[in-house]
Length: 91
Image (cartoon, rainbow, N blue to C red; front, top):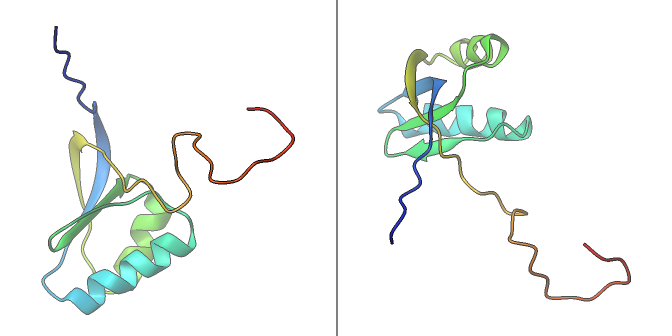
């Protein structure tokens, strides 16, 4: 039996931009705030937050809203509890 798991739709903020420099600035500032991001070709998506939306708009970008699956980047420190080192405490 094969089971397919899909992300549920959530209210997300979507920023689409053809200027890569502007989009990278938004990614930088959102990343500095540890905001989970889903990044695509010419767009980024994060969970709707009016404070973040205002910050992104202040950078000269437009924000739209959509009900869509949200599948953010895993991040550098996310793993499956696999370690390449040992330590004395258990998980």
